[in-house]
Image (cartoon, rainbow, N blue to C red):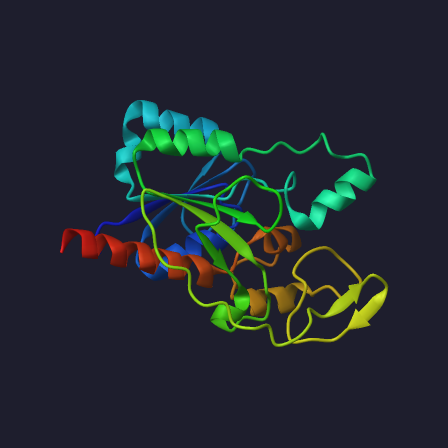
Length: 230
């Protein structure tokens, strides 16, 4: 659909944004860190402050859809146990509720993305790399506001994620795109497995979601809109 524009909040280096681009959206990103490799128009700043300003000025009406991937360390299944064992439970803030409150005020359809874990979002949609033939599993959950789409079938995993777990090394068809050592993926392996070529920064790759996910979501959203207005 012509003229569709997505606001990509907590954008990191653009994994989500690139998928929406492939689905046909114009993309604007916002992240608190300097992201010189972000491939689209970019605002550096606090995402919540920026969104509140867009709402107050009415500029939010430039957008068709808002996507938000707030920091997930407070609820991510990969970090919750480590945080507790190290006494780190208080250093990560769960921003999901604050993000949702602002997204509701926009009046726009939206997507909130989080990994598996304790984050308090509705799991309206769950995606996995195996659904798209990728070299990562990278399970992610999505809360959909003001629109809906069926979840695609989740095919059986073809094997293990390569690397050490509980002291045992296993080989497998997927790489671990997080952390260092223990058989974790190298930067080129992460780039290839997720379909991300424009950044070779380890931290950005470990935080990214594969563009295939948001390409699917963006296409589903545009299809749903066309059906509504048909």
